Image 1 (cartoon, one colour):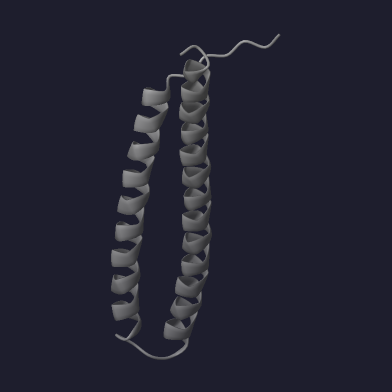
Image 2 (tube, rainbow, N blue to C red):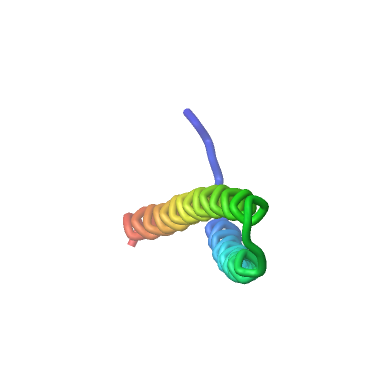
Length: 95
């Protein structure tokens, strides 16, 4: 028989911390994107076109990172809630 123990409060705290971190990452990425967009308008020519390509590539990568972080956070939130629900159901069996 498999044995496991979960500290639901610690897991919930970790999920909350992760949400805050993801929010900070999004805020910083949005600020960086704004700076890069502003910089794009500061010159023209082939260097500008190359820079725009790099910015587009970075933006695509950044969006995938955000999607991954959101997915991880959603899974963690659901897992924590599942542990809490099971514990409550188990406790109710003895009432």
